[in-house]
Every structure is written in C-alpha cells, then in structure tokens.
Amino acid sequence: MAIVDLVMPKLGESIMEATILKWLKQPGEAVLMDEALLEIATDKVDSEVPSTAAGILEEQLFPVNAVVPIGTVIARIRTEAAETISTNLPPSNGSTHEPAIIEETPITEHMPVIDVVPHSIAENGNRFYSPLVLNIAASEGVSMSDLEKIPGTGNEGRVTKKDILLFVQNRKPANGQAVTEAKPIIEKTTQATQPVTANTEPATSRPAVKESDGIPLSNTGNVEIIEMDRMRRLIADHMVRSKQTSPHVTSFSEADVTNIVQWREKMKDKFLKQDGTKITFMPIFLEAVARCIKKYPMVNSSVDGDKILLKKDINIGMATALPSGNLIVPVIKTADQLNLLGLAKQVNYLADAARQNKLKPEDTQNGTFTLTNVGTFGSLMGTPIINQPQVAILAVGAIKKRPVVIETEQGDSIAIRHMMYLSLSYDHRVVDGSIGASFVTAVANELENFDPNREY
Picture 1: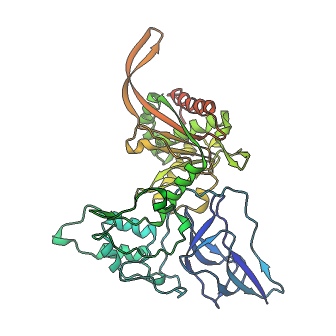
Picture 2: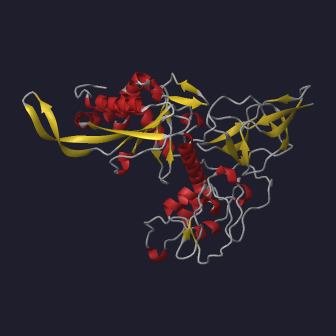
Picture 3: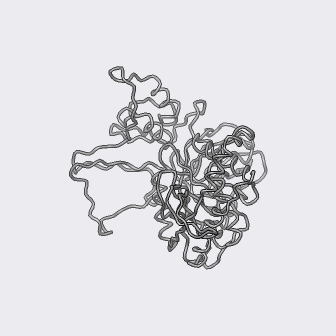
C-alpha cells in the first residue's frame, strides 16, 4: 500500500489560496484517476479538483469553508503502489498579489453530503451563503430574513442555487402585486452594543480598520451594518494591496471617435447577419490597445523584486460588470493576433460566460494588461486601480457629442464630433511619465485614425 498526497492546485499565477466549497468523496470511498474529489473557490472562479491517483480516499485534512494556501496537502489517497507518493509541485514564480474579482458556481443536487464540521446555521442568522446565492437574492428582492428561512439541501444545510430559485418561483407576492424592485440583503442594528459574530475566514483575508489607525469606530445612531460577502472582501483587499504595492500615476488624453461611431452604425447589422455576432466598441478599443502595446512594451510587464518581467504575449483583461454590480476580468489571450471579427467573438463569448457564471479558471488567468470601459456606466473618465501584478490599466469613458475645433485645408472650423476621454493608470516604479503619456496618446491617435472604409 502507498499513500498519495493530494495538494491544493495552483490555478493561476496570482492565486495564492482557495476555499473548499464541498467534498465530493468521503473517506473510505473509491476514487478514480482524474475523478473530481472536491469543489474549491478561488478569488476568480470556482473549480473542481481531480484525483491524481486511483485508490481509496484515506483522509480529508481540511473541512468545508476552510481557506487553504496553494500547495498545501488537502487529502491523502491510499493506492496499491509500493511507496508513498507526493503530488506536491514547487510553487511557480508568479506574483503573490491577489486578483480583483471572483464568481461562484452552483453546488449541484447530486453531490454527497459529509459531516466534516458542525452545522453552521445559528439562530442569529450566522449562516454561510455563497456569493452566487447572495447575488440571486439581491436581484430577486429576497430579504435576509427570508433567506434564513429557506431550507438548504446543500452541504451543512447550505442554500444552493436550486433552493433559492425554487423559493423565488414558489413565493406569492403580497397583495397580488409582483415584486419589481430588488432589495439589498442587509442587517440593521438598533443598538450600539449589538454583538459581533465570529467569522470563519482568517483575519488576513481582508483589510480591517482598527481603532489604532486613528479612525474612531462607532455604529451608534441610525446605521445599517452591511456584512461584506466573500467577493466584496476579496475586491477590497486587492484594491488596498494594489495601492500599497504600486505608486499610481494617471495620464489622460481624448480622442475623436466619430469615424468609429459611424462605421459601427453602418456595420453592426452586417456583423450580426453575416457572422452571427454583435460588434461593440470594445473589440475596436482592444485592437488599438494591442497595436500600441507593441510600440510601448513596458506597459505589458510586471515587477518581481528588483526585476522587470517583460511579457511577450499580449493578453488583455476586459473588466466585465456582473448583474450583482461586481466586476470580473476575463482575459483575451494573444489579442494582437486576432482580427476585429476574432476580437468581437472573444469579447461576446467571455462577457456572456461571465454573466452566466460559466467562466473557466483559464479564462481569467495570465492577463498582462487591463482595459475597462467606465463609459458603460455613463462616466466621462476615471482613475482606475492597477490589476496586480500588471503595471498598467486603461479606462475609456463615455462617448459624447461635443463642439470641437477641427483643422481643414480651408482653415479651422467648429464641428459636432463624438469625443471620448482615455485615462491610463500605471506603476511609476517601471513606467515613467513619458512612456505612460506617450502610450495613452498613441491609443487616442490609433482610434482617431480608424479607417471608416474598412471591412473587418
């Protein structure tokens, strides 16, 4: 007999830990090679961990909801081999910074239930809910009190996607009126002495404001206490880490995108009819960014101590808004090698997969640069925070009609043009102002010189 150690796998260069969502096998059960043993959640997407050997599951070393560092042994499998084997691999040289955003996947009804830790549902509502369940509850107007009443069929009595969708389907609106407005899931305090329940996640997983920071902590008065869900805590921690790691500088430019607006209006029906995909502004922006990265490769790098890692692949992350209001950043790999049609198909596929919670772990890995469209929300411009371990992020604002001065052979004139602001935040440790300003100006020029007569 031999014992094989199963370790927490590394699913991306910036992922340093994962949360165990559910064990799919119990100790004593037979497992096959590559058979799924457990479900884990990282700060990007959820995934299943397959068995690295065939045999009997000997031991589970961590309970459900435990946050486990990458490379840690999480289970042991007894095999027929003659010696003990470890599947632990040396950690990669990737950055230790955590990425911004995650997305949950539902726990399916056929998965076995194991009693690894005591039941976690308390009378005070201290019950674990996945970000997916909380997002559905918020969008469907399910209050926290109603959520606590839903019987869970998942592990530890956890409410699954199926449970909450069944509740939403069967509930009867009051007074015969349909619920049209989603109410946030919040907890309201009426006393300053309200007890704080213990959280099972380690304190190091999120930033905390302490009295020693010089900021008085008080929840007196008319206050609502909103408990951060796991996704929001990861986002908050990532933003703070990014600011502490990189000295941020932001450079601005503006572009006349009239040719792009008119070309898209002319071509969008053809794209949809002939190629079966929509053409938005994002693929056009991505094409321009990819071309300019080749001219200014320093913005496509990362920092490892006192070394600069210049990335040869141009993998552009595309910040995508989820229905919950959170963001996730799927990555378009080798964006410089795709034509406009290829970029459009990738953009639409990744955006749809993100909103439907169907992104795979590899869809959010290995980004080298990020593009975010703050104009989607009506903002003219923004100062985005760098997505570690990258060194630059570009934000494009809303496209607005404005009177501007244009130069013609007959002289200057004032015309109504479609204008857009661009803002590039960059890490001043490796990207100087001359490079940052030149890059964002180059992107603006690329957009302004868009050929209105091109096909794809």
